[in-house]
Length: 322
Image (cartoon, rainbow, N blue to C red):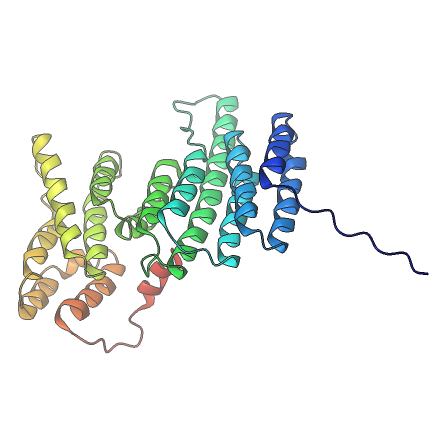
């Protein structure tokens, strides 16, 4: 007579495991807790208890990050998003709040300043390496969340709120600042006022000649998405700040071009649009992507079809940032 195989032990409510795992974290056994978070949440997922699997992963991500375990915390954060996809969870404010809570637990640590000695340089190199890891981990989590949100009910470009989170973290924490990537996410976000203040901050510390490129890039990115409202708002905010500081925006050709371009796009004025591109060609050509963006703007605002098969190359590069 064959012995009957014992049934699988039923899973307790998620809160029981969350409390046990929190104790493991508090003991400092971060690696052991990490393996347990992954294996236990997988069991709940297999049992189709999706909301409890998400509770466990969310708790683990936040606790690991609060304890400075960025790699572990971000891994659980990414699994949290993957579980949202597997469970086909729709985008809504409640899930967005949970994503925001994880985001806010990612460490924000200023880089050490005024270092000169050899030991100090070693300290700086270590800090730079840690900052790079933090940015890469946060970016992996938020890009996964953007992709989920686009698929499950948010804007087709992904949640504007999550784009704004990523833009802010990239700007504040990146040891090697990439303003093109920062701008890419800000223009898909929902906070042009914050974008304007970020540009003002950048202009105060960038190399000479980068201010006008940053402003033009931001405005052209907005316009290439058909967003004339926020493009105008951004320029208005920059002008207000300049007046507050009792100076004008840089009187450079690229800024003049943008100042003429914005009112031109508010009316049916394709000949004037083309004339502006011709007259300001030398400053537009300073960044190859500007012509690509202007081609997209011409198509959106005036129905101009592209002819060059190579067009779209820089647009594809921008898409890789998403």
